[in-house]
Image 1: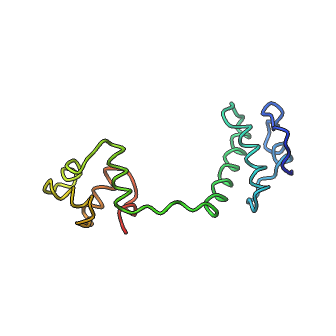
Image 2: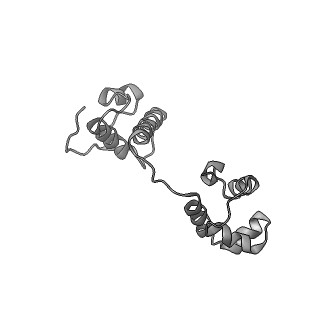
Image 3: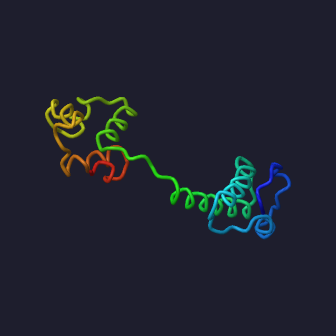
Length: 140
C-alpha cells in the first residue's frame, strides 16, 4: 500500500485480522512512506469500537509506530535540576516542600534547586518513589 490522498474510512475496514493484513501487512517501518501508511490506518481506527481482531491489529500497528519513533526521534536532553523543577511545579511544590519531602533542613531544598548541593542516593530513592518515576531521572 502506498500513501494516497484518499482518507481511509473506518466503516470500510475489514472486521477480521486477515482482511486487515490484506490492506496493510504489519511489518517493521523503515521509511516515511511506510510510516505514513501505518498512521493512515491507525488514525482511521482510533476512537472507534473495535472487534477483537481489529484491536489486536491496532495494538500491533501502534507498537510498530512506537518502535519507529524510538529509533528516529531523540528525546530532548533534560538536566536533573530541570526534571526535578518540572516535577515540583507539576505538583505545586516549592523548595521548602522539597526539603520536607527529603527530611532535610528547609534551606537544603533551595540549595539543591540552585545546584549548590547534589542529591544523595537516599534523596534519589525518595524522589523516585514520591513522583513515581525511574531513579534514572535524578542521576546525572
